Image 1 (tube, rainbow, N blue to C red):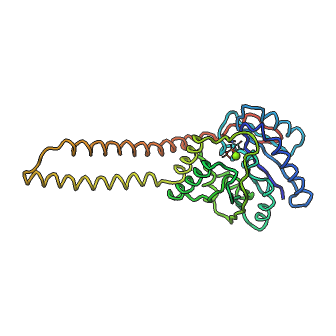
Image 2: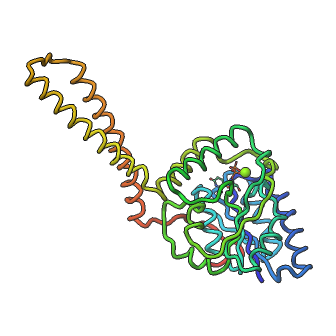
Length: 312
Ligand code: UDP
Ligand code: MG
């Protein structure tokens, strides 16, 4: 079998050489032990501003098995993964981060699961000791909210996974601009398996996922896979509408009884409340319409500027 390794790279000059060395020793060992017959490593440079691309070009000059795609700008982690997967030629394609938080040595175990007939193998973090308290806490919150919103994702699995050739082919048919891979793969079905690992500390360099990007990512996950927020809008809207009918009935009743003291508060509070809710849920609906707008335009998910050792 041929193995494809896909690695998104965004400003990783501090770590990429170490990662590459560790990967090469692993793939060479696996080739020697006949676990795999052939391999390729596809680095997707996601518009790095540092020396990453030059380092990657250096790798590709040494071996035709090392391939590089370079984006015209920073498109993001998910488009970078998608580009790598779509260009992979292997029977199995594994994606992992450039910073060695996903130990490459786990690939052997993933291949075993693949060979025993699983089409999608998720690497799941056993412990998150390598992450800060804050990162662990926000990550947990993320999975809880996703569950509440009815989005089917694998708990504590990031984007370290192996997929088979036929999953790659099916993946090629998914044309979504708002891409959330952690939701896509559970959705695709086939036989799926989990393998466990300890999440290590980032080997060098800094996280490319500050809080703002993480929050945007979580929001992407929810709004790309769940219409629960829209349903919430209609449920709350209906509740408030029913409540106001009761209030109207009560107002009429007091009027008929001749007890009506025109109250300022009772006029103004519902006005604010309903007005506020209106704007809130209009905004929510706008979010989804915005997404539809992006999908309808069918804009490319990424634009490749340079390629090394790899054809279209
Ligand atoms: N990454 C990317 N584009 C981005 C942000 C990140 O290709 O816009 C890559 C990054 O180089 C790394 C992986 O995605 O290989 C995960 O990023 P990082 O390790 O910074 O995220 P964290 O582990 O802190 O969540
Ligand atoms: Mg990381």
